[in-house]
Each structure stands twice: as structure tokens, then as C-alpha cells.
Amino acid sequence: MRHGPPSTVEEAHLTARSLAVDGVWIGSSKDSEREPVNGEDPMPQCHFPEGDGFPARQLVEGTLAPIVVLDAQLRHLYVNPAWARASGVPATAFLGRTLGEVLPDLQRPDDILFEVLADGQPREVTVSGTTGVSSPLGQRLWRAVYHRVDLPDGDACLCGIGVEISNLRRYLDDLETAHQRLALLDAAATRVGTTLDIETTCQELVDLLTPSLADMAAVGIVEEEFTGAPPPPPGFLRLRKTRGSAPPGMEWLLRQMGGPGPYVDVPRGVATRHCLDSGRPWRGNLASDELFQKVTVDPERTKLFRAAGIHSFLIAPLIARGRPVGVVLLGRAGASQPFNDDDLVTIQALADRAAISIDSARRYSYEHAMALELQRALLSEPSTPHPAVEVAARYLPAGRSVLVGGDWYDSIPLTESRTLLVMGDVMGHGFQAAVAMSQYRSLLRTLAASATSVDKILGEFDRQVTQLGLDRLATCLLAVMDPRAGTCTAASAGHLPPAVLGPDGNIEVLWPPAGPPIGTGLGGYESFTVRMDHGTTLLLYTDGLVERRGTDIDVSVRALQTLSLPADGPLDDMLDTLLTHLANGAYEDDVAILAARARRQ
Image (cartoon, rainbow, N blue to C red):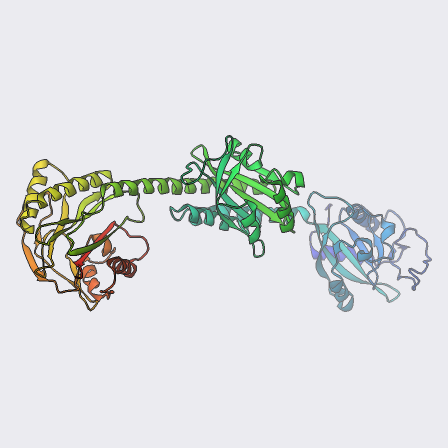
């Protein structure tokens, strides 16, 4: 014999039909007489066959499936023991009342039941909500089939047979949640840490966390350098406020939560500090004012949380390479559920992944700053040119590397109002290239004192570099500007050609004879001379200014001639405009550029 609730609609229909037979009244007694219910006419009678041993009664009374019989107004004529146990309400409390009158917290499919009464077609419905029986599942769920039963006296009633599927629904919900969390962890690998910028990485993290896991999120980074600000008090730990995310209308909370200024000095005993010291997350659900005060260093800020509707907090430490780099603070407000254990595990996993990216970005920022300081130290300002010549220069490091480069420039005053302009590029990157650049720059300054022609200077430069055994090649362009004669004489050791900006704002590229790079020992350099009319500017540069991936370098150089620049303004403004025209995100290589023109008399 099959036990348990009916498994198909057809079985349920058969059970419903078995109730419509002659016999005893289903109710609180077996009396054949019924009093009016709620002042109305007596409800239609529903009968069982005589005898308690009849299989139909055993089936209805003994099954684990809830069974109810309703009249045409959806009032209960009968409730079996299974539904009384499931609802936590005695069967007698149902009789003569609708489901909404007995259990108002259940969602009732009344419209569908009236359709069954109208056309006699059975239908499946879902009943959900809470009853008088507490459940760890919270909302309970039943799937039921209702069948119209035509009684012998011509009236009609409904028979409903249900099966509780709360556990199945919970399982499916948990499975869907697990899929969403896995997708979130997978998304973190591609959405967090796309750059080596700390602010961007923190913003990517909070954008991932909200609103999928929290209503608001904020990140604080442990500050270890106190340049430009006094250190925190003894025993305090300084956090630098970075980025946050909150829904519209709650942004003010992010601005005020940490107090004024870019930093928060955190004492011991605060939940944030506990997370950093222990390396474990902290959770405060349905927080009291006392618990809120453990989240912030300022007790007054509890009022802010209350005003924003925040009821639960979760703080996760950002741990990278065994040391804390920051914390992420998450809050839930309004109707959002408190944080559960699954939330804690998921958020900590996301924090662990993000911590590596944030730490890498911080290390990059520190190393890049140190590299730039070294570059500036090695690349000192060019010598003061002859008073008849004005110069301006720019140096921009490659945007995606912490390595210093070998680009350099110089201007060296000569006799008779002339100035030697230098642009060079030691091949390679890193500290060795930067040190070699400094050596080449010093050597060339010494050779310039001979006051010989530029081609001879390059020849001697190449010879001495070879003899000294410096193993890095370099390209170099020398140009002597003579305002008195109105000329410029240049020679190239494998360097990119110079360009001139005319008084009309148009650029023309000059193509000098190309000699071998410095350090080959081959020599054989040639010079050439061009006219420099009043108002003409000479432009020297390294390949980082024009080089683009996938484009021939000569094509990129010729593209300079399509630009138009202001020719009569300050040289600094001219260079800024030139860089704006050519900038396309971060440069792939270091950029050095030098502009020179005869000073107006």
C-alpha cells in the first residue's frame, strides 16, 4: 500500500471524489442536524460512509497530507488531523470560517478556488506564509490540488489536498543562493584589481559588494606613512578612508561616518581594530546602541546609523601576505535580512581576494613613487641655456611600470650666444639604465666644453663610451641653436628626427642623416644645418611621445605634421598642448621632450 500524501493530481482527484458518498456528517460530531453558521443558512452536508472501519475514513483521517473541505463561500466544512497539526489550530476552530479568518498570515488563492467552483476543473495552487506552528524555515509552503465535489442535494463544495514543500523550496533557494555566491566570487577575479591604482581597486570592491551583499560598504586602508600629517596617538592605528558605496539617499552616511578629514585613528577596543588585530571578521546583527558604539570611534555616530536605518554590520579584515592592509565595512538597512554565516564566509572570501589586489596596488604606488624620485634625482634640471635662448622640458614616466628609464635631455650654453641642446635615450629600463643615463649625461657635458661641431662631439662620445666598457647602447640627438646666425645645426646617433614649429603653428619634421647608436664604436656621424626664422621652435623628443603599438614608428613621427600648436605663447603651454593632443591613456614608454627657440629681444 502507498503511504504519505498523493503524488499526482489524479490521485488527489480520486481521494476528493471518495468524500462525496452517503454516510455521516463531517464536523465536530456525527449529528445529522446542523445549526446556522454566523446567522446564515446551514452549510451543505458532506458525508462519509457509515462505519469507522471504512477505508475512506482511514485514508482521510490517517494520511499525513492536509485535507480540507470547503463550502461555496470557502468556509471550512471539514479539516483532517494532518492540517490541524500543520497549522497549529484545532479543527473545530476552522469549522464555519474561511482560511483568512483563521490564519490571516497565509496567502490565500481564493480567486482560483472560485474558478474551480464555477467550471468544475481541478486546479493546483500554492499556499504560503506562517501558521501557529513555528518553523526554522520561516515562511512555509504547500502545494495543493482543489476539486469540486457535487453533493447529492445539488450543492457543491471543494476538497483540497496538499503537500508541504517548504524543505524543497528552501533547498532550491539555498542552491540558487550558492550559485549566486559562486558567480560573485568568480566575478571578483575579473572586476576587482583591474588596475594598479588603490582608489580604483577599492571602488571596484565596494561596487561588487553592493547591493548584492549589503546596502552600503566602505573601505579603509592601513596607513603606515605619515608624510604631511602628524602620526596617530600612541596605541592608535590610522586608517585612510578610500571609497564607499551606498544607495541614493544614503550617500551622506558615507561622508559623515568616519568623521572629517581623510583619516580615522582607531583605538583598541573598537570592532574595526579587533578585526585588524585578530584577522577575523566581526558581525553585529540587529545592533543595539551599545553594539553600534563598538563600530565607530565616536559614540555620537550611533545616531547616524539609526537615521540611515542601519540595523546590522559586518566588518571583514583585508589580509595580504599575513599582514592587515585594511578593512571593509558593510551595513544592511531597512527590510534587508541580518548577516548570516553564509554571508560571512562569502564576504571574507571576497575580502581575501581583494586584499591581494589592494596590497599589490599599494606596493606599486610606493615603488613607483620611489622610482620617480630616483629618476628626478638622476635627471636634474638642464643647464641654463645662453640668455638668447629659452627652453622648456617635460619628462613623463611610463604609466604601467615602476621601472625608471634611460631618457634624458639637456641644454648647455656655448660661446657666441649658441646653446647645445641634447636629447638621449639609453636602451632598456630599470636602475641600471638610469645609472647609465646619468653617466652618459655627465660625459656629454664634459665633451661639450670642447666647442667642436656636433658631429665630432658625437664621434668622441661614441669612442669614449666604447672604451669605458659601458654595455648599454644609447640614441642621441645634438642640436646647436645659434640665434645670432638664425640657424640650427644637428647630428643624430640613431635618434628620432627633430621637428620645428613655425610661426604659423604648423609642425615640420626634419630628417638628418642617421648615424649608429652611441656605444657601437662605429662613428661616422654627419651634421646638417637649417634656417631658424624668428618665432620658430625646435622640438626634440624620445620615442615614448610618438610610439604606438602596431604602428610603424616613421608613420607615427610623420603624424606630428598633422598637428597645429600655439606658436606665440609660453613654451610650457605649447608642450602641455602637444602632450594633450598625443596622450592616449598611460604612455607605454617614458616620454622626454625639449622645446627651444630664440628669445624675443
